[in-house]
Length: 264
Image (tube, rainbow, N blue to C red; front, side, top):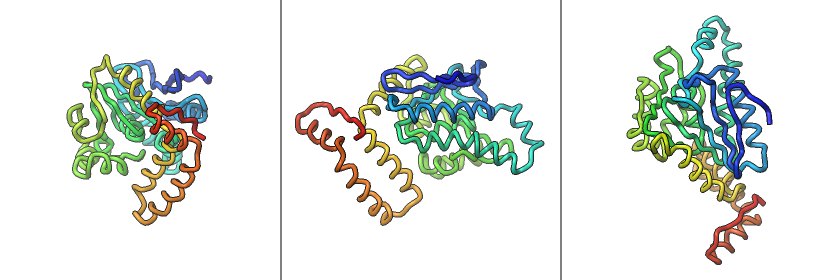
């Protein structure tokens, strides 16, 4: 497995974990860091032994945002160069997480600011510890959230809360994050890793082809119409019904046992 500087990859019992670890506890992210996240996501997505991907972080915070040394460099770059940095590395990481056909779960400790917040939003599910703090504070720097938050937040927490976060840079802590649906669960810092493993095990039990198909349909539906989704989903359902996993799932329900899905 490739050796990285800013992240760690591990695989255990079908769960692939990408851990952000810049060694300072803050995990402020640079283009190099995001390039490694892109490569790490590619490796875990392509590995047939990985059923679920966890995005986690070492240290006090999930990610304090973009590295300020890089932000200062941006002031001397032209628009084309800035666009290449944002799209190739920063947005590239968010795209890989969002479009990953496998289940993705973010385990968020401490602060998840700007880039950190948006990478967490790109995951299917989020579990946070009691010290969590989300913040889309791009506006305080005179810039905008470019990695998907402007699209996802209104759909996750509602328009009003999304405007507070994106237009005012409001901090959202554990209780509000749970109440608004920004996270699925809040646990103590000591329980975060263990609960994440348990949640990942539940996700790993899903039929992989069905999971990927339903996930793609949910994402497509955010930008589609009911008529288009009826048409698309009938075709997808026909493929799933003809699969071995459907026969296995049906047999398991009738026999009152746990299914053993293979993705075929």
